[in-house]
Length: 406
Ligand code: PLP
Image 1: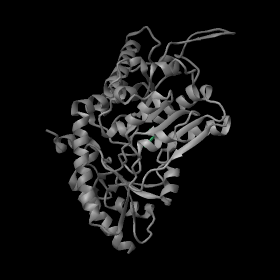
Image 2 (image 1 turned 180 degrees about the vertical axis):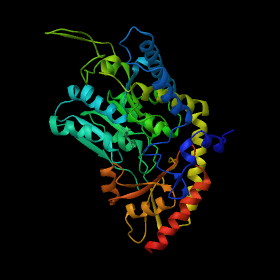
Image 3 (image 1 turned 135 degrees about the vertical axis):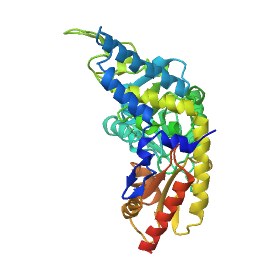
Image 4 (image 1 turned 135 degrees about the horizontal axis):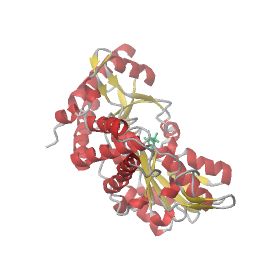
């Protein structure tokens, strides 16, 4: 049984107060809190098991290397990837997508080639493609969402042409909570020989992920949203695509031999992991994934679906609140504005006084904000430890904000 109170007890920060009120943490879309097992693993790694990895022939270096390398296998299991050598460890989604841009796309794409994107991508899945547009004349093709925030997979398929080399799509919008049928898109792209990159930053947090079934070429995740330390993450790269990639960052670890006139690179995935990595962050990330796999992502998804349904019912009673996006099956992520033109920052400040942490701004989704005709929203994003009582607290705080601005 999913015992949310027992789960909450695993997260020390949830018992603190903010501004004299119990913390109601609804900013999980930006970064999630960490369970004690992760915090303890980080402390243990520094106190008892720390050294650089892959370098030494001494006890601690071998221990740190074993602990660090074990995470690759955990990520592979979490994503249902059979071969852990298809997992590149990194600092998070931003680095993962930039690596694909530099390692795979820049050498593969020519002027006039197209990259298909949805209008609700995060800047991390936009700006690296702008680099190709600016520097190489690559064309960015945008697919709009429908009025309810849903993305029709057929619209993405229709945008693919014989010039399309890559489809880069989020699995779940960080603003609208829209969940995208990425499997249909990836399979259609594969049939046409088009590469696919799925931004799993949000999707991997809210639902079980099966990358093999999805059929994508690249799948990026970020540790700090998955209840692990910041500075950890990974990207799945399908072997056939990895073989087409040139190294991104150069330095230690990614090489086998370096001479004055030549260099021999290490085998993938090490070929794409230069320098001293986020050793302890990655070890903590592995413990966070163990925690999630013990809970079961299908149980997390079911809990969050009940939070979403409860929140939607409550919000429906607030006729001065405009929630952006109500696509069927959306994740428990709600962006909203209030009548009375109160700025999102003012609303979030009032909520903060009630101990309610939400995010306000453009959420790194400029094209979506343009599409919605908004400059900013407040966003309440739920995680595995949130409760219906916290939704009531949010609604009470929103009512107060509404009264102040009415
Ligand atoms: N993609 C999406 C959908 C996100 O929500 C985020 C973070 O908010 C990112 C990418 C970037 O993740 P990171 O900052 O961990 O690299």
